[in-house]
Image (cartoon, rainbow, N blue to C red; front, side, top):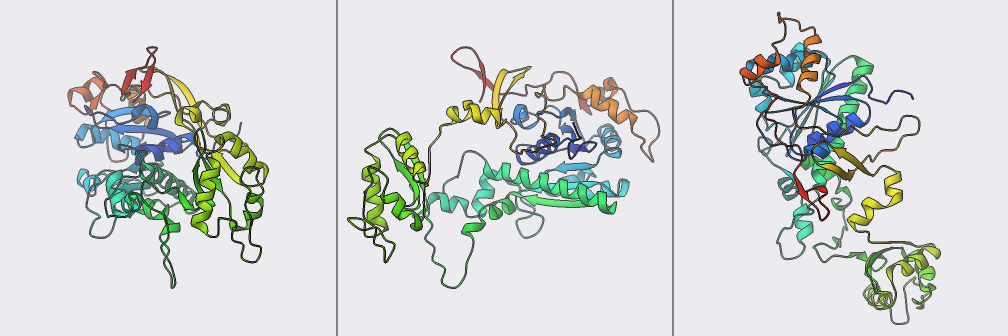
Length: 411
């Protein structure tokens, strides 16, 4: 098989929580070798999912002995991804300017909540703050002014991870073309505005008609969720589809050819919505979806998470995968979202305990030729005595609970 796009690229991942680690995991799926650096003696959130396929070391980059290891790893690294609180990397002496002095061609990706400029830039924040400052909570809350979290699936965290991986890939490309390194930045706030672009347009005559709030079912009677006799489904149609919609068995209504509006008890959008609500209740969701699709209309049943993750088609596309974790046993989790013909992305190996790859990572560090520093790399035992590396007493990488049959399941 041909090399993956990022084969021979080494990434140092100094990130926490979701956005940063997700970006480095994507880079690994595209072929990069990823070294995951976490601080010792701290719990690592969602390690088993976001850090699969990475080599893990618990390294204190504030500790002088830990920095010796860090700089040796930097010597052979191509990309650094970090999401320390603003100003922290600089305070540790490992910000972009510090790294670029030693390695001018480094691709350095910084991830934050609010971005690198403006009055909020110094602030710390997570998914909820990112949603709060980009209007998402206002949209999710709806009328009345009470905010609501859109989730709890962390779409800004994962969306920012995608943008950070894209930024890193662009940096690698630019370095290949120009030989020069780059400092690239993205943030939860930038992702929040980017992914809401459709709803952030303003122009003369603009009317703000987007349905908002937890009760919103769609933008109108032709683009919304409907309840059938046994569950929900989504109808996706346009006014040009009214004639076909009106001919679906069980829905029959008349359409005014001159105006394109539905008649016969559905003279406007509100009445059409009420008519469809009433008639869709008369049959099961699967039957309505089949009839609507047969008429050339868009429709799909609402799929539950269990059904999604066990669907053979989803499994066949590796969107849902099962791995055997050394700690948690058999675990089903989201897989790979990118498809490529000649070089399909690789699914990373199951994550071991955080820090379990310390010896292998230190071996890589010992091979680096580090200008300006002399002497061999300290042994693992010495580094542990200096509190620079943790390789024993490792914390669990999975939060698990026991299922009905005693199967370990992710919480």
